[in-house]
Length: 575
Ligand code: HC0
Image (cartoon, rainbow, N blue to C red; front, side, top):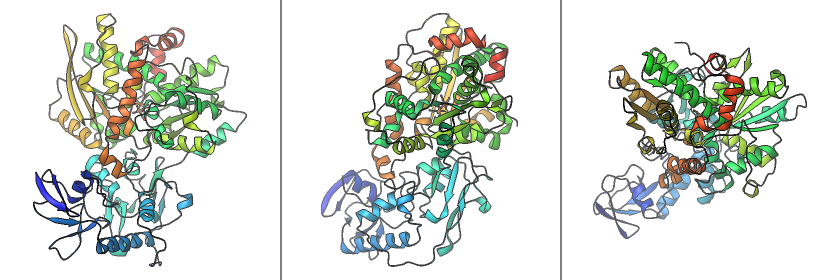
């Protein structure tokens, strides 16, 4: 431990941390814009300037390590003045359209300007960034709002290990840009949106599809149905000031109904169907010498990653479409038929915690007879905006159910939204099927939790111990890919990979939490709790026990893995 003085108060903190972190641990806040704990600690924004006794120049607290006996002052006239000037300089080069900015009231720059009492900007003049890149189906970059904090770059390079952003130019011409100043759509971006949820301002946002949804809802010739992903219910409440980790399933269904969707369904239904298909595929591969380990195929960021960076590994992918697309394909076929709707007049909207789902829905592979499985995908944040625009008092809404059949789901489906959830759901079903009984011990703790890479061995029958791995976040995915190549996973059966760290609960379409708050709470764990508690509360906790899943196989699909299922629910990706 290290003991030193901060604002004349003696504190003891662990060795190796920065002054910024030490201060926060003792409830002394030092402002910062660029700091992202463990990811971006580069002293770029100069907002965290403090005085250190004996040092002539002010020091950046986010990169200044604690040392025994030092004396730090965080609130001196000199430190305050430096912060103000630095903030005024940042603001002078910032496109300050605060009233119409998507990040209004959730902008770290705006709240700093308010906290530091900035009332006018003395340095008005030419601004450096003008370009808006909106060619990607998922992500829009607006250089005029970039504050050069490099948080996006650090997340993309270090955490996701995709590395499509770089810093170019110097001084006034400095920019953060995709390589070769191309559009983000033209480089190897996987559309995960982790840059967006880590941007302090409005320089990065999702491509909005809200107006397309409003237009569809207003079109009397269309039947418009909606499906909502597992992880949305774990975070949507945050947009309405409900405590993090509040499960809002009932209010979510109520809100969607009041937005006038003709059917209010749940992607979780498709998640249960996915388990039927993926479980069958796994059992077949194990029994018949298919390619192992089999890898999940539901995270579209991961799919883009394997196609772009590991095309030779594609045979490992499950042929299953994602639950989003399974749900869509079944709505466009079975549901349309059941309700006498021409599939061309049926609009399927999905609400996802994900920006890559916007890319997924437009893929050619994910359609049946030229009709896309899902027409429009919006993020959790976009749904929150629609709810606000419709003036619904979300916290006051009653708890309602999703519509029957396509809104029925098991506990296994709910946990899809957290890393390890798909694996646990699959093991629950595979174990029951292979043992031909209703196994009671179904909480597979070994695959739970926010660790980026987990492995486990599960004895599913006396003759078969399944070896599984679960990874989330690009850097962990890369470790697994390299491991498969060098034989580390050769006796593994099944691997779950999700592009976002922690899985969908921490997806790029989820509510944006400030870097400061993320230092205090692990948002992945808090949101995951909301899913595991819903799972525990469900009557059916295994996908194959969902009565509506049993019914759709009986009345429409036939056998899991059968002809019709293959036609609608499976796909192939080209190398
Ligand atoms: Fe996910 Fe999904 S669990 S990818 O994270 O499998 O986005 O929530 O909807 O499709 O179900 C996201 C979340 C989904 C899909 C499901 C899977």
